[in-house]
Length: 528
Image (cartoon, rainbow, N blue to C red; front, side, top):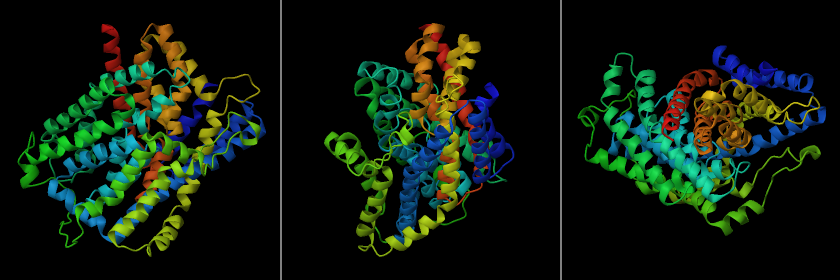
């Protein structure tokens, strides 16, 4: 039965990662097989399976809405020439793509994660990176890998506030977990900038360049950025609250990073004299638009996201009005799908696009034609996303069965814990990754496995806070390899059908990050 339960993990890895099927085909096969297994082996009633399918279709809508907003942002900024101006602005800081990947994917993406979450960061940063000269494959891969360390805290701490609600809702408890995450990441997440530079230079560098030299020359600065980020995260978690770690840490680190580039701190001369680049494009812009005007849609969306997540009366209004959520689908209280339309990052992205048009070209004429083009381009993505979510929801709803079995994810967790509880701190982040690989959410992974992680920690005599912190970091790393995240981001940059290729590139850093967290956690247990 364990192989049946694991099929939701094994099938996508084999069909997409090994056989290189496009997501529309590979995930359709996976969803169909998991549906049959749910019916014949887990004895899930027909109406539960049907409710899961309805839930999947509904859950796809808010994701597609965010994707629409991200695509509109890209297309409109190209139309107004703002992308060209943003590109030129980055090159005034540095034309070196190694520096740009950390500024855009890791730090700017981290800030978007802190105020938004929901898979939005990579959808926003990947197009920006393409404008800077990154190949679409490099942009998608690096954007997905970068959206990991900040995702432990997600949108204003949601992975802890909601994800750990099954374990405890006490503020002191949640703050303790947040502090433990930043302590682990001081020795694990610190290396994420280095991993990104390693991937950029070795996977996406020019064939005739010295990849090792390209990498080694940026090691000091990459480690500096990683340490600064981790120390700011640690400081915020201990002095303010876990809710603001993913906002304040990247924001402060962006400022430090730009200052360090300006003063050439820990950077080799080659960065300024002969910037490392795989692009042959020459950045010359006659665009007279100011940099502030070019960035205005992004500034607007960040300010709106921050306001709607931190001003409680505004948040309450947006959550409770135009609420398109579907509760108790087909009468099952456990089967729900949320879509708070006004609160959605997709809505805020779309509003930011409209405001950006008014600021940049003082006209909304191009909005509707662009919207039609964007909607038409999303057809294959919608199909791939729906079949992926069908597999996910059957997997997670499998507790509703007549075979007296726990849900498939809980069955997997119990079998693994039975044999590996003695080394559980090393396993904990990988269980978190498993949850995010299937569900695409740090929060949902933690909701699913949080309680069992806490129970195993107690039985194994390991600190509950340490194990839950490892769960959250692992779940954040799982976002790199989640199929529906890959489907969404690849569609933004026109790489639909390349999901398997992307998965093969992101799976190694995900496993490395999980292993680092496990090893650091194990060392912590020796001194606790």
